[in-house]
Each structure stands twice: as structure tokens, then as C-alpha cells.
Length: 386
Image (cartoon, rainbow, N blue to C red; front, side):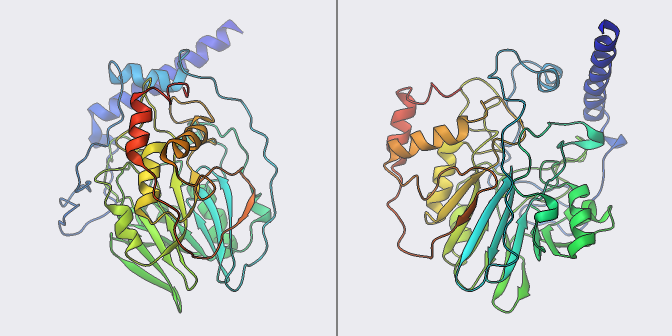
């Protein structure tokens, strides 16, 4: 047993050293995913956030120590459960008329059924989010078994991180359903390596799916990489799906940035449903957001900028990517709603696998009072959430 532990430790340290090596010698694993003219967010070689690239993960000490803590664990951080109980559901084949139904599969994977169209966001059914069988292991099974998933018409892929772009899952869905896959520039190259065609658009690009149904690729604030050294060779994005009975917004994976991009998405038409990330925001003790991930407080700002639609909190409780406890994001979001005087029923957590009927468009609820949230934060009201 001791020899086995030593061998495992040696293997993990080898991974750490290789990870460091590719940051020192990036030419070994750099990839060119996209070629095109320079723009306001592409310098001819790399994409960037035009509102400022504050997208690096905060870390104490050196990079090696940070990576080691992520691989070996950190005894000072809250424990996560090994397994979360999930009761998989079986969605209907279609949802017609003015109805809309959503089912959280887990992490950033959401099934949206409306106007006879089945939409899937960042589908990941794999057990681990990483290359070669490494990476964070899912603690919650998918809320819908792949065999019970209805025929998918449209897949949205926000960027190329492994917890969002899972080629194994995309391949299975492509072979089975031949869906239209929409992503942002350069990610079609990554997806195409599995023999899967995808439509790659720049921010502001639009693609007609059916009469009256269109996908718009919209701005958010993030970064991407598959191999450490190929950082920002492809673009990241959010999406608006324009539908006859109210639009759908998928934030993808994002930090707040300048905070203007939610209103840009809302300008395309009233949003009926939004999938907004709330987790993986804490990489050091007490952190409330990171440059590339919003926490519950910034998620409230995004929700407000979108017009306060019916919204589902995503990007928590499936893969451990950061320091906070498993249920910290939804608990903190609920507490912030209480401070802000806003409607947690319109933007509150639901179990993985539950089918949710989205209400029709109507008057938006009152705005969250973010000044009160800031006051609650300064007063230490949220310090109990680790």
C-alpha cells in the first residue's frame, strides 16, 4: 500500500512538473485555432477582453504551490461530498406552443425546450473534466441520462475549457442527432478534431436556425485554453437564442468585466430565461469573485442587467473547481437576495434533473439593491459561507 501511495504521488508530481514546463516552454503545445484580421478583441494572434484582462486566477505563493493544492487538495478548504444524490429525469420529446421547459443537467449543461426546439448548452456527460482521464471528477451524475435525452436540434458551446467543451459527449450527440453546433471563433477547430462540424461566429454574429429562431453570439468576460500554452487562441462567448415567445440567454463561463455585456444581450429582445453561473468564484479564503468567474453577488448584477428574467443558477455543485464549499454558491445567493430585497423565486437554485416550467414574459420584478448587498458584505453577513 505504501509503494502504491508513493507511485501515485510520483505520478501526480510529474503532472505538476509537466504543467509548469508547458508554461515555461509554450511552443511545445501552442496551437493556432483561428486566423483572421485584428479586431477590437483580437490582436491577430490572441483574443482578449476589451474591458480589461483581469482574468488570471488569484493565488497565494508560487504557481507550483497553487497547482499542487488543486491536485493534492488543500486541508484548509471545506470538504466536498464524494457523491450527491441525483434522481435523473426523462424530459418530453418536444415542448410546443408558448410553453418553455428547462432541465439542469449539471454544471453548465442545460436542456432548454421551447417552440418545438431542443437546445443544449455546454454538454458534458463525461465523468472527469480534463484531458487523458485527469481533472476534477463529477460528484453529481447528469440530471438526464444520455439515452433519455430527447433529440437535440441546437448545441451552444461557450469556449474550450474541458468542463464546457467535452469532445466525447459532442461526438456521441453528433453521431446520434446531427445537431447544429454554434460556438465562437476558433472553437470549431477544437471541435473539428473529433470530426464534428460547428459554426464559429465572432461576437455580434448571428445564425438563423429556423424561421423566427436565431442564435446571436454575444460578449462576456473570460479566457480559454486546452493545453496551458494555447491561452486565448480561441474566443469565449455568451449566447442569445431569439425565440417567438421570449429569448433565451446562456452566459457561458464569465467574470463580470465592465458589467455592460448583460444589457447588450438584453438589447436583442426581452429575455424569458437565463442560465447564469454562480460558482467556482473562490480561489483564496474570503474571495467573493475572480476575474474570470462571477460569484453570487456579481451574478445578481448580471441578472439585473438582463432585465431580471426567470433564471437558473449554474456552474456549481458538479465539479470541484475552486475553494468554496459545495453548497456555498446557492446559499450565498439566497442570503444576498434577502439583503437586496429581490425575488429569489425568479433566480434561485433548483436540483439537478428537475424539470422547470418557465413562466411567460411579464413585468420584471423589482431591482436588487446592490448597495445593501455591499453593506451586508462589509458587515460580515456572508462570512459564514466558506
